[in-house]
Image 1 (spheres, one colour):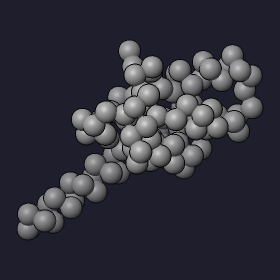
Image 2: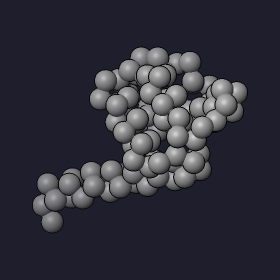
Image 3: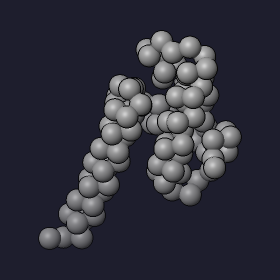
Length: 100
């Protein structure tokens, strides 16, 4: 195998692993996997955390404000490490409010 083939295989493996992690996270929190993927992609593209987009992510669940707030905090507790890893050391503006 060539070095490029090995590198491409590794990149594909990492992408699949991340996609599987997001799908599992979406299932645990009752979210559509594609909606969560879109949210994460938006954060990583701009390196800016958008709280309104997080609220919109939970809109289909029709939760009250208290339940939605708890659900957002629970999701972010699991999502922050994944976002930081995907950002590759770059800072995501606005994410500090959810870091523990």
